[in-house]
Length: 282
Image (tube, one colour):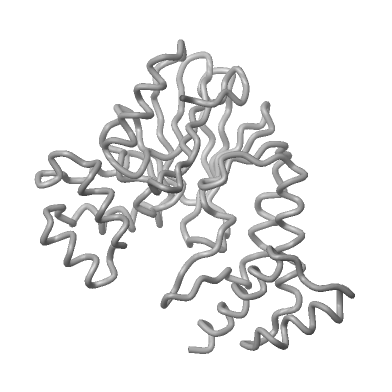
């Protein structure tokens, strides 16, 4: 079932057990816009069935927030103009060369081109996958793009991100709502989960320049301003004490600076920033 955020904004909640991110729907007077297409044919079809229950203008546009498989593998199911930034386009082009039979999927997993979970989802939720070929995006932008749905403007911007190099956010000014995709999360490199420390403050600045009150995230669904501010505060407080590859030193520095032990979230973030230093030193 779609969650109604306002008269013009809906979202399908994330399902982490099925690796399904939040999907968005923004409706203007003339057209509607979808944010991310889902992790598979079935995910996309489930979303479309929910949209059909609503009395909303036809879907004309789709924005892919970044080129991670769970956000774009459903895109063929939508009769919409697919919009991506230029780097997302390059990454999707790589997937257009993939074949999706069992032996090919296993090869991609063995060579770290695809996760085992991705293979499992494709096998379960993408019928006719032996003949499946991912479509090409229709509109490619560099930095920003504004879409008018009819008395409903959506601002797209590629921003700096601790998660991926090709993150696009979607801001709806009159609603003070922003869809962040996965941009505010960390990532995994060489089996180490980390936040890209050098991009943390630039990312927060990119996001906070928009006057948003509600934030839709890929794997949390929705947060208000207070919740996001707590998240930013814990991230930045953790980042400030990590200067090297030593978790012990970083934790001691946190306690010295803040006169307290880190909470569970802060300790998780400290470890992630230490991992980032380890990756940068390799």
